[in-house]
Amino acid sequence: MPRRRIPKKRYLSPDPVYDSRLIHMIVNQLMKKGKKSLAFRIFYSTIQQIGETTEQDPLIIVEQAVRNATPLVEVKAKRVGGSTYQVPRAVAPERGTALGIRWILSACRNRSGRNMVTKLTNELLDASKKMGNAVRKREEIHRMAEANKAFAKSRV
Image (cartoon, rainbow, N blue to C red; front, side, top):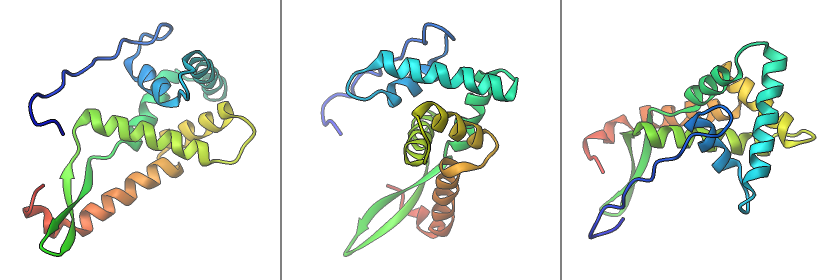
């Protein structure tokens, strides 16, 4: 964390096709080695596949999936004396969204399947139904925060 000035927050422009900031956040996390056009191609194919399988608006399903994977609390390690405590704390909305997106993408990368489009489609559909590894990770974090609620008085 910087000692002198707080860095200016950079705001993301919406994506060109759907005019959504959330999609641009997902594409930026999906991108590897600066290949943004490939990331856009993968994600737009995913959205098209979601629309074909569910016959609903795919943007609503993607938003629901990210919302279901977004944590409300997280635990942060704090050292007191010689021991380390896991202190639960609330998550800012922007950080929560970023964590949810990161968990969805890591879960779909670990998934078995042929290509990234089908893996991402299945993970987003599972997350929108409150299933899948990303939602399981969120529930695990919430359980850890609930278990360590006694240390909430010693905020970080």
